[in-house]
Length: 191
Image (tube, rainbow, N blue to C red; front, top):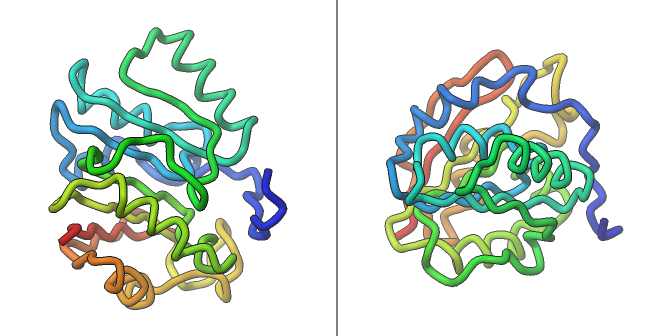
């Protein structure tokens, strides 16, 4: 792992408190789409997306943590899932996807860390590069209140802070939804 990644995943998977299938449905994924899951962890959102996009769609899952990617690769192999590609990659450096091919980009519980680490410009440069015009960026992040899960409140972002952070990269807010006791979902459209 790159030492510049100061905000460290604490080992609690969002699988414990987020319903990935419900959130994927709310986002509005469609068959045949290409999905990028930035900071995919062990891939439970990637796997949920793979069932929606089907055999002609594709999910590209990237995470900087080798152990998480290895777990996802094991699941992909065991379950013979052909439409998920898992890469150990630093999204602040280079996402292993061609330009303008991603229909939907997921960022689940990771945007606050990119902001905290001063890496938002780097990761958004890559997200903008790989996304199609009018593609969707779906952000799930922790509510900016004290909860038993997630980072300290001082490290969390409010919906307004996320919207302001993404405006300069050409994203317009499209939707907001409460997705559980700890988290919210915001969907943006790339202009």
